[in-house]
Image (tube, rainbow, N blue to C red; front, side, top):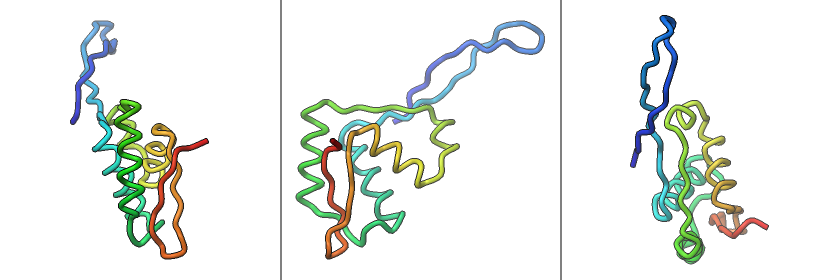
Length: 108
């Protein structure tokens, strides 16, 4: 869901105008979906570990993890940068097991 935040910008004429900077909001479920998508999209794993997804989603919900970023900043990122931002912001590490499944755990 995009939320719009207002900010004042001074135009060349010196008159203030208001610009709208949409913000991307990630609730626990959307955050888990985004991380899962980017892990697969980047080829870091061939499939996802269902129990790790469930445990990570429960952690996000228990911690009331909600993160946000301006849409313009998100648009300027590459897909690997987006994944890195999602992982760092949610305190999550990912790795693949010997079967190529993506595993998730809380960052230390």
